[in-house]
Length: 345
Image (tube, one colour):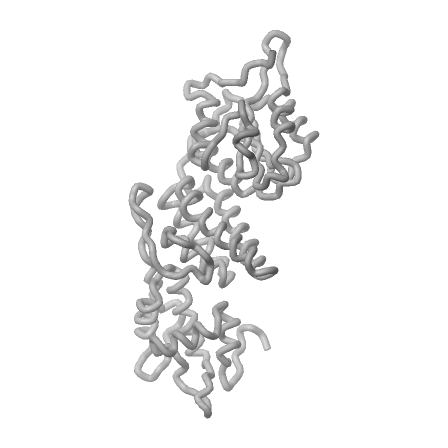
């Protein structure tokens, strides 16, 4: 039987829960609290969900995934049923998505559950993302991420929407054995896709051709490149040229890139202490190029939680995406003059 075909007798509660990506307990709770049960029950009061019932519950899931409180979502969902107990088609169920706050200066809106993920006190948009991620609803994830970037801009969306949701998924994964791996992978992919498509969504300055680029690289063995993708997109908004090398860049490859591009700065990302290498940072900072008497070397920014502040003396440090963008913009010079690190003596 295909996923789109329902048995004549209707789906059991367990089968419907698997189809919707929620727990059977959630369906029973919605039935008990809000009357969102099947229109007809089999003998023995066993729930059997007809195609019309399934369409109704899909509408309920869409509303809760969009951040609507369950009680309000249930009220809207019940309006979709006519007196005969039939549900309207899914497209006819209003989205009832709560409007995001108008800007970064407003306090984040709170409330609602997050699909079973440990979100804590976060923006309401995070909860909608979390529910969609747990349900593996890729179209909904894409829609909500693009909407957030369009409303808030890239930096606010990264720091206040994307990162809290990614961290919640990571915590759930770590505490659940092998479960939720697929949720983390899907959410990461959608975040990455949104970051790469941001040039199409936001106004951006023309890329400056009068300054050397900023090289973005993960340290050898480091696979977490999403923060660098966010930085790459945010620098693009400023018109700062970049060379994104991505995850786990070998030392020889990083050295070759620096020598060939003569960058203003090199950002070395390490998510874990095991990949953070102070000798590597010093090696890159000591690389030189140019004519004798006018040789230059790059500024090096160790970035990420893997770096210990006490071992990174002498290197600039950034706290968050906004700080990194401002630091690198200053290094590139607002007036077009490039501030290279002085030559080692």
